[in-house]
Image (cartoon, rainbow, N blue to C red; front, side, top):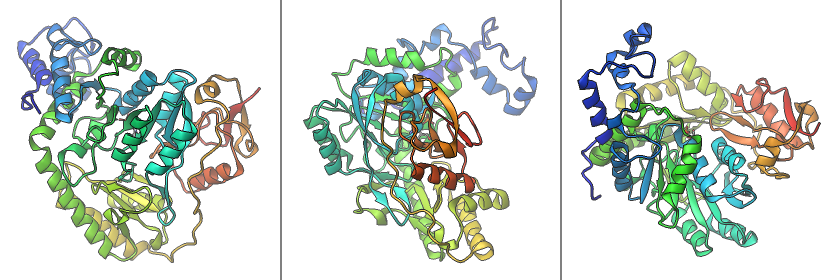
Length: 484
Ligand SMILES: Cc1ncc(COP(=O)(O)O)c(C=O)c1O
């Protein structure tokens, strides 16, 4: 780090403007909250004082040359990147910008099939053609792991004209692939490597956490600072770390999709969270790891639960593990992850991040302490006493389904479509994505062939009360397929 990380140029400029007491004849129209009294009473004055338009001292996000430029330079300096961009539309916009910058229409991109829906949207926006890697799969837990260097190398050799590889670091459950080795392989074949590090903005700040993709040599990465870095929801970072990628072109693509009215509350939260990570990140993450280890140990001492973690290291596709992701296998209880999620919420007032058929996922981060962890442990213990049933038969134990891509996501998205009953869609090409959210990984994406196995899986998730998203029909009785 070369710059003074104790500075917060953007946040300081906003505070300076607040102190001026300017009379606003510009937007936002609530005029410092006077026009929305109920919310102001609830949130307090300060939030409205900060919700201001881009004044001359506040720079502009489209072509920064003042305090936003400085704040972005500080973020790049902290993460060791050439260039950083502040995002107010989440990592979603960063991923889409990376894909659009490097993948022109019709060009191939290699990526794991279990990517987030925002990447599918990036494929639609860019017109890139996906070549999917099959991630490794843990049959006991029923979840996908990372990808192996061997699989990546084989796929690159089979598709020599590909120019871009996309990796996810880490998966939702905290697993990372051997990204350093994979990036070396990709670079040796002349590919750019872009990384979805939505769940890993904290990686750089503790030696016991997996490697940040920038340290592993990635060319571009996007990170949700709001997920694990402490900033406010929607605020994220995009980083470029390769001089041959023109940062002005990256900005041009970002400007296509980013709002013209960025919230200064969100932008300052990036500035302040970056400072906190720089000055105190290591200490704070030491505490996060300490309580995560405590939670894992306690939960593993309760029979019927298995809090998986670093014990998975060495399994196929598991190179490193982020211990702050507390995945708990609940199948031995005789309940599904969805049932445990609902019991925790409705009976114990505990909100977890995500559930699937066999597991629940709790995120431990900067705001957690022993008190919050003990509440979770006590609730799990109580659930075991009150709800434990005989372990159920394994109702779905199949590898991740990798559908056949028939047309590119973009061509499918823009094709004419007809609506058919879900049960009648077998053999058709999907015109839309279907996913359980979270995790938001499409089970079927536009352009892919729908099979009996896929319908079976969707029906199973519907029965389990999983929150399904994507299709125009919210009940998912019908689906749009290509044709007319
Ligand atoms: C793996 C992954 N990538 C990308 C995203 C999108 O991030 P954001 O919500 O910051 O737009 C998510 C969101 O949950 C995610 O889980």
